[in-house]
Length: 456
Image (tube, rainbow, N blue to C red):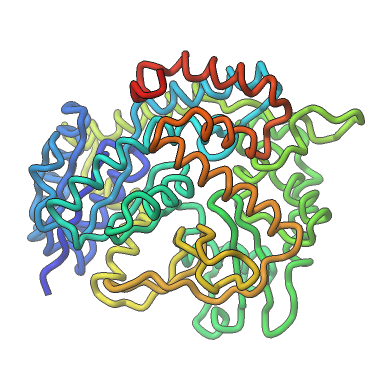
């Protein structure tokens, strides 16, 4: 069977472009299809296109390669379209974090919740909708996969404003089977370097749910025994050694300690603490008592720039022969999106965590609640697997986040300042409505060069 045509809009994405190339070349399901790379930056596009050509030549596969700065030139006949673009995201996330901190809101990532998540949606979602209009015209039967944060807000927006298209949203944090293996190790089910056998996998009932970046383990049973306490105890012991988490960067700081504190408060373990700690108000520095966990450090954008420079230097090394292509194939890993595309196209019957409407998966939440859920995938549908009732307490936190995302998506689509103000007011990090008016004005003014004119 011939492979699919996969169009990557934002091929210069260093978090996805290289991995997509690697998997499109190495997968026997995909490497007889077509990879179409799109990026509005011609330099980034040329570098990724050259890398793809060298990878194809190195392996001698029949993968066809297309490349363009104009997506309309390559969208025709696409089976999958992946959105993975962002314009100067590091710069603007840093601005979001620094401006918000002046008003008492501290963000260690700033790309999904809080003012940072709202502003990123305002920057990216109008471009996402523009892409959807072209997909509707040129390849209306393609699956559209959103890989742009905040993936829940953008995913809700796609469901609302591009309802004719087949869409879902992704994040790589719960990439299967890796995430299940990681928690099996923490529970003591398997050794550190081991992976679950088919029998162990069947015996380990592991369920995660929640909005993207705010997911929690709602069930972890091995042969009918709850192993959540064992996982929590291991994290507690690791937390005891966290004396200087800040040296690891803001997103990594004190994560085991925070995970254990949230477990004591809610009886469930967060599955993505590096982001989840930013969704709650507990470490914003507003408490009256001393807390052994300090207020969140702001997102450290300089290391991200350095990582980008290093990644582009590595790509150039492959392109100019300073590094052997064998290293590219040895050092690059599968990507969540291309794993899913491979499974959908070939009917491999593998489940993945996907951001999609709840349906009846969590029966005490709305059917349209846009959650990250273990799902079966095919060319016909994404079908979430049953989870059970959402835990009381978490359910309220989740719904507030989802309402914030929905209001944000509506504001981004319409340019309605009242909706934008409502999104900020609903956001769990907001502490002052008076400050919120000023914060919105400051953020819009600082980023007016990358926002639609209808905001001004």
